[in-house]
Length: 588
Ligand code: BDP
Image (tube, rainbow, N blue to C red; front, side):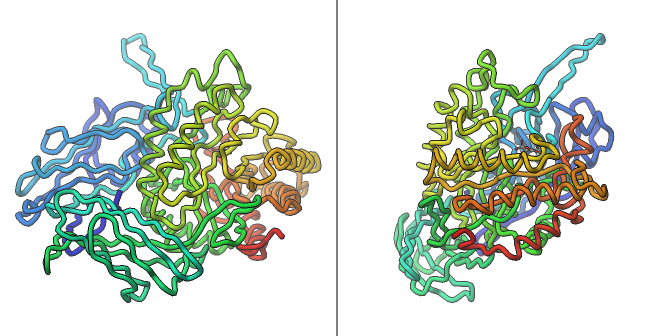
């Protein structure tokens, strides 16, 4: 799916601003779009509201627009949206983290039009993420809706990403898929172009970063060009070409779209993760789209700041834990050279989450949950959206699913197959393993290309006993390696909750800044000795909001930075460490 941009043939109108908003049975009130509604409403009953809510705005259509096709495009609405233009139903979308668009040409009129979104933030055991949803009736007959997140982040909702009016020509470019083969600095690049309507001819022009033409071709839906002297996309040293695709009829350009793309190779071989043929070492984070004021709504300011903080720290990568991030962030990562593990919304796939976390055959996750369709949908939508980004080096099919339970392999096998079939660039695929799924009990690891571990040795286990933590970690990782000697292993999460400003002379005191540093030092001491351990992504980049819980102090406090992006001691520790770890060939 193409990112919305204006071109010589396409007009783009950004509908961001203050819309009208109401919760069911309430009055209309102002609400900023994009943004989560929750933190704009202050009081707990609104902030924690569960159910239907409505957004409305107006837009204006000009004569020129009526000569084209008019679309409304949403970057994301969390989690469900039904869209109406002038009170007529246009379409709907389930899934809170991927874009969707509808053609509204037949529904708009010259001048003022009204756009309404009927939305809903309910999650249950057939949605992703998974939520525990219940309804009770109180003594006055009122239905009380309750949603208990089956995951550790706040269920922010609303119109989270930009809404655009996008006008395209009658015949237009619907999609562009770019693949390539690289031989040293020579590339054969393939373009697959999907057109709606008719195309006399399609012209492809490839520009380098100086806007110099490096290749052209003209023809049909599938085209190929050769590019010499290729400058590769490299971690933290990105190089992006532009593919300008045009529908032409003689001298007339009917449609034009420009897609940036970098070229690099990715391969997993001999327990190493190779980018452009060299063993890459992941330094970075699991993150969240989470900020004060905006909640989970797009904040370009926070994204740019975060990218600069990551560079300051010497990081080179992040995982889009636990859902597809905004297209704006993906484009930023692609431009700035951050290596991305791109994750679906599959989080909370564990029936016993948060209770006693025990595998219980009487309550088998894979028998109770009905998430298969949602899972296939998000894999399709994520790959469709992000397939051309050089920054994406691996797809994460799920985070911390119950992969030690019977039925897990049967659930995941077709999903890995689907992702591998859909990805035109054949990137590696992984799932992120939770600490209960040990080498002895996990059944899904045979499907993964990289063993991605979320481990909390020294926090949820072996608290304040770092010698025991080191021993346990080493034993477990070595065990994984014995079972899967060819698969690289990395941390996709490790961390300790830390309240910024809390200090102690005793470095073993949990929640202090001192302990967070000691925790990381101990873990890093172990992984530094293991040649097949190819990366460290800390949990988390910054503190973030969660549901209420006795283990959470106004949210999860495992950030290296506070929610306001101020560094804790561990942020300085990692800067020093990562400044001295090269992107390539760290492990010999
Ligand atoms: C893991 C989850 C992550 C949590 C983290 C934690 O993947 O979402 O926030 O642990 O407990 O279980 O901090």
